Length: 320
Picture: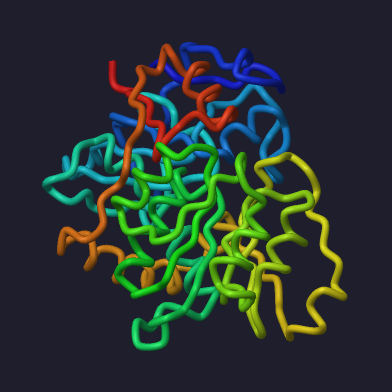
């Protein structure tokens, strides 16, 4: 079978289409014929050696997919730690979910990582109760990306007032069409100052932070009293800078969110899926896809993501 293989550590140039051994499921595993794979920033970090717990190369890339479960022919979408970008994979059954009938394979591949991450960000921030979210403010970094667009859709359902950062007015306008109220072009304006102005000096209740470096401190300074920064990534590649003295005056806090860890908690994942599935069935959630490329153009797809040129999700077609 064909697979996208990380041949060595590095940038997109290390990705190769190679023949790989057919996977053989053992008891307790499911065999899936993969149709499409969703690309995440974690995949970019995996290729360059920056994602914790990943085996040394060579290894098959990818952690998010949509395909057909061989046992019963059901269309499924799923999540795993690596090896998703192959024509056939074996995976844990508890991390497979049925694809809504009206969705394409590409939409199924764009769902698990983005929407579970966004859901858990609101959960960590204590904002999942719509009755408590009214007039609550959230700042979403990289709001035009995969997790960002998912967070906007969920925030709209919860009645949250949302502020989002992105690199262009065009991207911000497209996210406003999804429900974002306040867009901040960080190339034109410092977002910390923008938050002060837009909230009349009060700040926001939560920040969804995946940039790292100086942005962790800046995000804390964007909070109002008892606010929370939810950290789920480090897109800058820089170690987060956190001056804990910033937390004292506001009673603020910083929370970590790692889907790799949370996905092992079956009860937590089931509760999240119950709500996400209900929203999806009502037509109130649907993945936003910016690019769909064949697996032969995986290097181009990784480059789009690493350079921040994507809007919504980048998806790879895996089926030949």
